[in-house]
Length: 333
Ligand SMILES: *Cc1c(COP(=O)(O)O)cnc(C)c1O
Image (cartoon, rainbow, N blue to C red):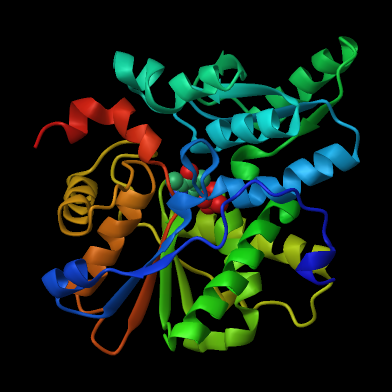
């Protein structure tokens, strides 16, 4: 089924720009670099979840839901975008926030995305670290139904086959932008967490074959776990879209050396990446996702894995709203 056949509501400012990063490329001295600005999707400070929510909210409306129920970490960019999407669609929003990151700073607990969740009218329930969020959401959904509400569960990160359609569409958009500008991309790098972004991109770029490598830089799981997650989502997406030959497992590239101590825990390499992009390009990354993904890109240029023979697209997945929760780390410089 072509992507245009799936129900979709418009939430994002599209197409997002594809821009050269000449100053960063000159500084690093390696491949030609471009940045796909999905931090500019526009919804309540933007980010990659907005594309997924276009398909998820359409599905919720089709099912007659009146409430979006979702979950994430305390500083979830996904929850913030889901809250905004629900507001735009006239739906309620209820989110479970797991205290996944061991951080007691008051800015982490109250500023950044959490502050915006509240402004956007999202009801927040906190859960302790290690909570099984999918089961907790099922329990909350029951409670909401008992109150006469009609909840629609959006999985963590909006990552199921329906949500991943957003990144099939993004891949099509990148292909078209590259065609018009005559850019021959060899590698696309991005932060990978719940996996839907990578699964969608792999489906969208399936015709490109091995000449275009999509490389997910993990922000939490180790490589084997993350590859499994992405492969499972990819096969669900293949089924939903009724695609032919399955994706060869070798097409799922994941790097896990840039996580540091764990999800949401800052690293020096992330800080360097955030500072370089800010100071050379005027672009704001984020400490949890795009900063670590850019740290991966920088490392791969310095090690020669990405070199003058490559044309690299960095997919900026957003998250700058989370900067204000990390003032205690980012403000060191
Ligand atoms: C959620 C998120 C990601 C990861 O995308 P997944 O589809 O969950 O893998 C990357 N960057 C930012 C800023 C995010 O909020």
